[in-house]
Structures are given as structure tokens and as C-alpha cells.
Amino acid sequence: MALIEYADAAPEVRAVFDDIKAARGVADVNNFWKALAVHPPTLKRTWESLKQVMAPGALDPLTKEMLYLAASAAAGCAYCTASHTAAARAKGMTEAMHGELLAVLGMAAETNRLAEALRVPIDQGL
Image (cartoon, one colour):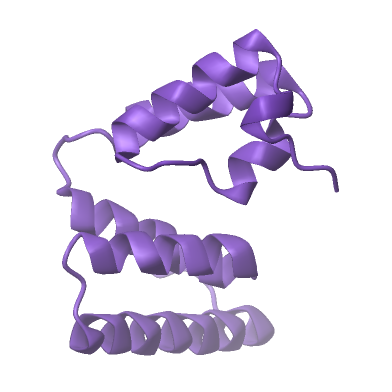
């Protein structure tokens, strides 16, 4: 997979990279954004959507990052799991919180598989 570096980027890619760097207070964008830059419309759309979804709202930023981490781990995306583990830690996730998150994730995976394997009918009123 090609990674587009800032020096080699088209102006529309540089504009998105500049916005990412400013929003995150970083000197360079990470490899996910560099990989998306092979298709500038996808890069821009993804960044704009991510900014909107992860913006302050009813859920606090740490909760959003921990949800993103759990979804990434459940989906088996090593890159996203690493990225959102780091982001959650930066937003205050402790080792104890991380441990509990992983315990819940593991338990959900186990009980989900059991319910599916047993074809448990959904209770009335759920």
C-alpha cells in the first residue's frame, strides 16, 4: 500500500493533512491518513465524518474513544485498535479501565457466540 507523504501530496490532500495536524496538534498525520490520501475524495470525506462523529456531544471524548477501541478490537482491525488505544489513553483511559473494557469485550464475544450457536429466541419485551 502506498503512503502519500506531505511533500508528495496534491494541494487538496495537503489541505486535509493540515486540518488533521491542526486539530490534533501533531507534526505529521499517521499512516491511516497517508494511505487514504491515494484517493483524495475518500480522505476528505472520512476526515470530515470522523470530526463530526468524534466531536463533543452527549458522550464524552474518552467514552467515544473507548467505544471506537472496542469496535475496532471486535472487528479485528489491529491498526485501529492500536490507534484508538493510544487515543483513549491520551484522553485519560487508565490501565484498570482498559482491562475492564477488554473483559467486557471478551465476555460479549463469548455470550454473543453462545446465543447465536444456540439460536436463542429473543424474549418478549426486549
